[in-house]
Image (cartoon, rainbow, N blue to C red):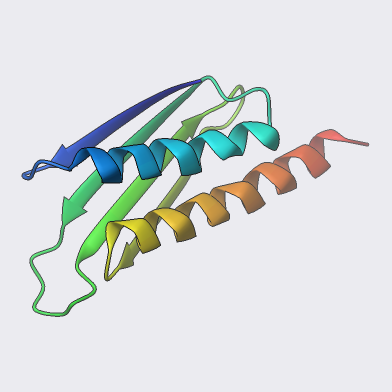
Length: 98
């Protein structure tokens, strides 16, 4: 599985990139069919502190899976998005099993 990370309008530091790759890489334990992963990091222009957005798209055969979370930090947003994708993968696996 390849992980593509794009930080939009800012440069993400290596520590954040490593954290994201590590978290997203763990999704492989739930499904071997993940082909590609795209992660988009962006800052919302709102005045609130919850202005960090992480969007993760998993390319899997059949339907692509997507999760978007907005939090105070990119790490927290990534955590929540990965957790949502884990649930989606689990649900998809249960549907495939008769």
